[in-house]
Length: 90
Image: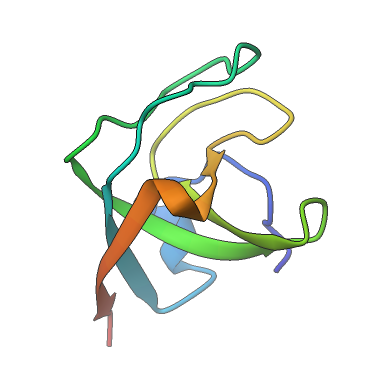
């Protein structure tokens, strides 16, 4: 995907894929010391997209609408989330 690493809004994300996933944060602990920007709250449900990271070699969860700085922008490890629903926008 051309937008592997980006701070995308919900509207921007849906121009790249015709669906939105929703996930609940189940682990907000151990925030990395070098993370600058928004951080998820445990128990909250967020619109997300799951993207295979070429840098990390695994799928990362991007929270749509969050703003964070490099190197990972708004990408979080998959163990921090429980995927709940996929909503197709057709």
